[in-house]
Length: 623
Image 1 (cartoon, rainbow, N blue to C red):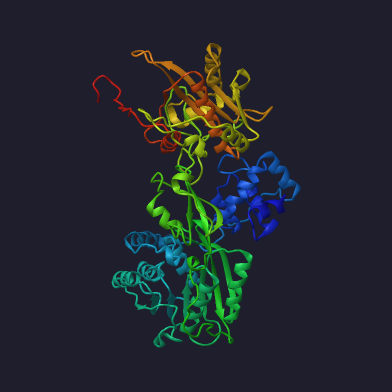
Image 2 (tube, rainbow, N blue to C red; image 1 turned 60 degrees about the vertical axis):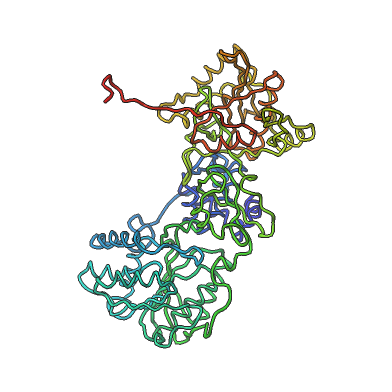
């Protein structure tokens, strides 16, 4: 099983990587994908993909934060990992350094400086470290004896460590370094450093320079210690470390402090080879030492390595560097991201509309204007990508007997929980992928008729995609599952005011069934519990006497092919309407419920009215 899961996501770490995720989940549960990424050192998209594979096999719960199922616990025990001891220091959280109270002011001041400082440039792998990380880096210099005194060379400083050194010195009452030299290509960063450092009492020199070129001669062999946080590629590590070596005084035991992000074993082997090739040795290494604002792929953390020079240390890049340097330069495949708000699938990477996920976040989803975005699989850049509108695959829950409220993804019916996940909105949605057969509008005569019944071939294809699930009329045996669906819809729709007792909903729907089961449809596998529920009622307009259909409820559990199951239910509901001679179908939806509005639009519904609501204060005086 470990091998199958590793191969399914093309995991370089193989079965040991899957084992590490299971071990971390056993220790940390309930745990978010980000927590597991930090614990294992695996990138967030890889951990998410592994979690999905384990979820499909029944070892991890459907709800998030993730937990092991009973089968998962049995698996962990069988693998000999059923021991959840955590020996991580609770004071420093494994970082080996604690910020003393006297430097709390430095953290606050650095936060303020970050807010007014230059923005990140994702194209050159920038991601600003937190104010706490800046202070911890200064403390690491102090602990290693590199400070106080001496001269510090910063090879790139979008993290504003130069200002951290100056601010810490100012808080402590005097400079803690004789001279800081910052080499960076960004004039905006250098101007900001000059502006702020001028009033802090620390001597900070700035040099605008493209590090693809050798350091200016005046900087060669002039510094006692260096620090760099390079682009997270082996080439970036080699180039920036080589430039740091150029600027250090000759001889052994000079320090270079090196920050980098977790990579696969093969990639990290390349980085370590570059370090050895420079004649450097590792004197210390702390995982998850650096925390970054952003850097979601790496879980927002990176390691911190203390390197020392030797008598063999020498630059490995003598002249100009002209090869690929940043991750974007080396990327040959695009990554598919899914908009959490509307399930649109969007490509990011070389040749795509967005070069980075940061650019996508800044622009927002082209389908709904929202986000955030969940990372998915890597795909070759030459593969054709669906447009945002074609790949938007929203909702599987709408309305409820009250015909109101936002869409939800009901959790597995056996264990209903509030549908919330880390870093996602409070009303996540399941996928609905309407096929062209279901959503293509027919030619209009007079009124536009936005849906036509699928042909036999189209119906057969839909049934095949939805297997093993089929639709049938609901009956009394389905009431417990239907009650859980309705309770979940109510909980998300009405919050604290919701009637979220599944038994009450089952009782209410039971009374409705006694009157008529028409239009009540469930989807299930033969002999299994319902995984989907749709309720369409036929009403009559009291003024005109015209009959119309009302979509009252729609919900699908997060099964693997839930989008196809949702389409199957919607199609069955509309076919029920046709069979009863209905030519007008109404579905009420909350104005902020973009996913359900999107699915209505895909099936040809047009907006015709808007409900307005106002809450008045309690009490007769209206105050």
